[in-house]
Amino acid sequence: MSNKPKTPFSKSELLPQAEMLEIARGKGKFVIGIPKETHFQEKRVSLTPDAVAFLTGHGHQFVIETGAGDGANYSDTDYSEAGAKIALNRKEAFECSMVLKVEPPSISEIDMMLPQSVLFSALQLKVQNKKYFEALAKKRITALAFDYIKDEQGSFPIVKSLSEIAGIASIHIASELMSNAHQGNGLLFGNINGVPPTNVVIFGAGGVGEFAAKTALGMGAIVKVFDNSITKLRNLQQILGANIYTSTLQPKTIEKSIRRCDVAIGALRGKSRAPVVVTESMVEKMKEGAVIVDVSIDRGGCFETSELTNHKNPTFVKHGVIHYCVPNIPSRYARTASVSISNIFSPFLQNIAEEGGFEQVIRYDKGLQAGMYLFNGILTNRTVADWFDIPYRDSNLLFM
Image 1 (cartoon, rainbow, N blue to C red):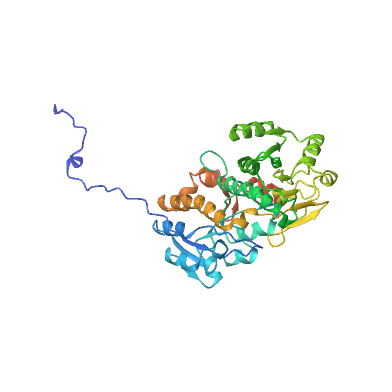
Image 2 (cartoon, one colour):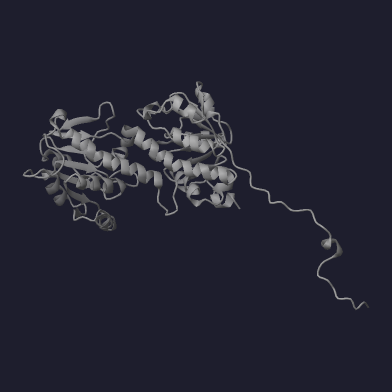
């Protein structure tokens, strides 16, 4: 036997070896289509020219339908200078590997999309039907609802942003409607020396209610907030840092407050429909020229007298009270809403480019997974499955 000490390396391991270079993960470049919104009175656009320029620098390419930014006062030239291709043919904007929309596409628009492409849009579950999901599944589309996407804190950033806009806007709209020019009682929203301050009642202590209350307080109003969640009411008090009147939804208390108020804001949400908490008999007892802004109208409204209106004919008068019942209030402020949506979309798209593509990101990004309801045509959202009686698979099983 040899007495030579054993070396931990073989002879071949001691020879010069070929250098192993680290191969960088390829960037996930997408051709992103942004069609013009055709939904009734929808003026928002999913990305601003600044965002397009930023993402073009990260490898993405853009095909934007002519006029897509008109409603938000962005011209084709703005997008062209940002590096996008302007498509005169609507179909060209849909024939991209990724399509960005504000409103969900129609069946005819889904027909224009490429198989196995990616769709970012709102879901709007309450107004959908089974055919919508079947059309997406047939094309093996991967679809994400931006209103379901979560951030690192577990909140819904786009929903919160649009709630902020709707809440602030509801007070500005009410202020405008109170003037004599709009059949109001001629009051100026605020707290003028020697003049009683405006009295505002808000139903709902969620996102819309929070920003409506904050705006009204900032304008010097007296604010009362009603909600059946004591936790929400307590949190609202802490957030505002001001003493506001809060109460659960008790009919006698509501009737007393609604009779004295100048403005009433409806911001209650329900699982299927917003609860009706203000009856017609209560509205009859309100001040002449008082204003109701029912932000909950997209879920039926929380005032019994509410009727759906639109941006062209936004108001009607009933029992001497001005009603504003327009759904999709953020579209009234299309530029602000577009910038807000764009600011949330951009980091997601940048991350997709940096991490090597959509499928790389969706495997570990729980926030994006929360927004995904179809993966290559397979339904992955239990709520949608239960609502429309469609089979579904857990997305975690698909990524194993």
